[in-house]
Length: 244
Ligand code: FPP
Image (cartoon, rainbow, N blue to C red; front, top):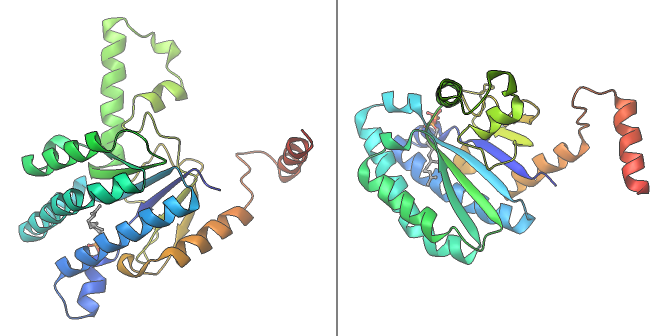
């Protein structure tokens, strides 16, 4: 089973427009899909789910849409806390959270605090997030540590970088899914998806369901993850692993 699934939830706006509805209705339907996906991941025993809920670039959308998304986020988080606790889900958030409206930040902090114990799934919402700004933040931190003399520049390795990202306590995603038909990464988890298996589906996020997720996991299980090695090496390793 994959340990960590990351999802770019795309297609809410088009889903609504195709039905003659306002884009906001698409986001509302998208929030329902979030709930279903969390429940599915709990059922499947997946320990980490990370969702791209709002990118740094999304602040450039029309003001009414940004405000509606922030309201939806606050109300969904508030409403979901009991269900999250019941399902043993810990809420976590990454991104430039200082950009969020205060009420939204407070709801988020409270929900993270209330769900911090006794969990089997960590649900991470990426909010006001972009991969490049995360890397910029990481580089500034490391440069400061080098200037302070708490780190030697020669000692900076891949692990040091991973530990200075917003995702320091999360494993790298095994699977990255993008719904909505586009085939791009859109500045999401740029460092962390180095070896993720990528899946692009034309299904709009509000229509994405447990069956779609299970099919992707099945395809993932049939892919050979070589991490730069040859197929023969990988097969030999899994044989030795099985014999242990
Ligand atoms: C992309 O679809 C989606 C977003 C920018 C927002 C995602 C938000 C939600 C799913 C709802 C709230 C989330 C939580 C965690 C409760 P789009 O609007 O870019 O779709 P389009 O490409 O069809 O225009």
